[in-house]
Amino acid sequence: MAELKALCMKCRDANNKPTMQVMKDPKVEQNEKGRYQARGICANCGGNMFKFLSKDDAEALK
Image (cartoon, rainbow, N blue to C red; front, side, top):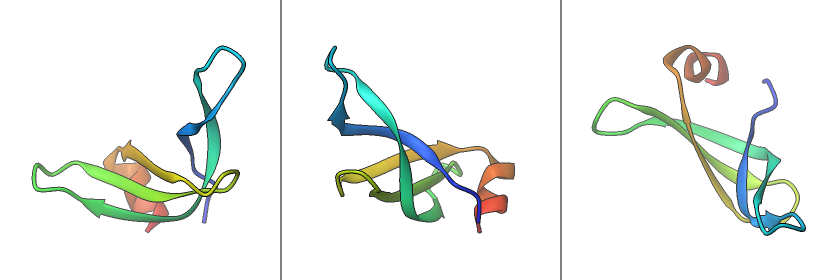
């Protein structure tokens, strides 16, 4: 499985902006509007992460 990176709202830089972190155990799902999304855990701090995906990226992660 490919490595997935997303913004983590808990991991902040010096300017208080979210940073890109690796998502552990991403679970790909499709919402009621038909958009694909990945939910997982931040590898750095353990916080919840969320990212919208394209159909091709979602199929690659399944």
